[in-house]
Image (tube, one colour):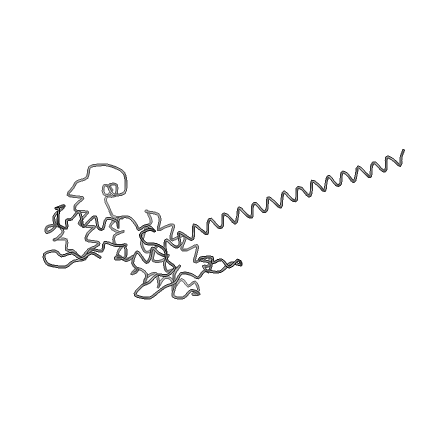
Length: 265
């Protein structure tokens, strides 16, 4: 959180991911969804079309308003556009421009616990395999995993990106106790509370899901390949047995016919 003074009055700019909640980012998302096409193209595409500076500055002010408590009248009339050696409109916008995208795992990291109002929530418990290896999300039911994956897919899609999906994903994966059973009513209540999670906390769970989903998919693929290899080995052994069995049968038949032929002579 950055504190600034304008006309001897203190104001705050929420310039970090841990300064903003899911609910606040939801308001920013509504603004993005309603953007005119020229502005969306200017920000999110490689098109190099000329843009009105007045319209662009108006957008800068709109965006700064979403992430600060600086009155619009000050942004419009008391702060210079780009004057050196003082806090300018362009400089303030650059502090919050990152929120037009999303955080990276390097920015946030991953964690198996998150905190809201000093209360900790823990990830679905892991289970140990026969070899004593921890299998992350091993305590998740099919409903836990399938629903969180479906919501994660929707969240990744720009067309459907809504921040309430993030609160629901987090509510499914994190709970007050490791052995809490799947309960849709409890999850919905927790998802509503999790709208007040900071983006940093919420994304820890999201990145954790992405990371371990990838590992699980690789593990499943490896397991399938191993099973396929074992099946092919069994088939090869069976074919060898059949081959040697036939060869043995042919040798036996040759001996039988050889004996019969000798007797006839």
